[in-house]
Image 1 (cartoon, rainbow, N blue to C red):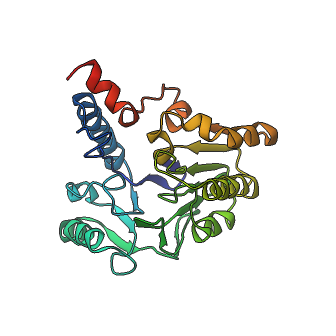
Image 2: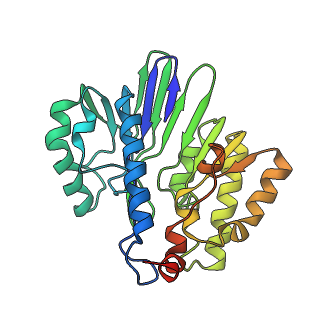
Length: 262
């Protein structure tokens, strides 16, 4: 959620739970937290003039709630280009209702838009090996914000290229998928891209979240990046820490939650 002099913006109003992790279904605590956070997300969307949808994965948009788009300016990834069949179906099922309720719908891939003095820039469609997505830059005369969406680190050079082209006071970087097997060379390459992006965008704050926190050992695995931040005066925090809250990575703890109780 961003607020500028020109209005309020919600990017990727969605949340989801992995159907299986460690061979286990979601714990009841995960289900309860999901409902709580979706309620919070809805309130942020209702107060926004602009909604951005960068991916058609359930983590990024609430396909079941197109009514949330009533009266909004909607910037979204183009579902006609570079999408999987499942992503395309989710997008058009959503648009059947959303396009009738939104004030404007713009397919944003590779395009720039303005709202007063607030500027929006969107990357061309990128691929992380599983999902397609677009990255987002929002800037005003006072500040700039850069959002990597589902870049996984970034895991690809094309995803890194857009981030490197934009200055950011705050960089929201979704982090690598360390809980899956990564070759040492790939892991080193992703970490090097993370360092390049943080340094060359001149970010003062990096929010490291999303994919990274699905691994209980994430801080240990990404220790070189934290050392880099200390050396260059960059604050690296999770979204929860940025809000002054504790990290509660329930999916990464699912096996422990099931051991402790139903």
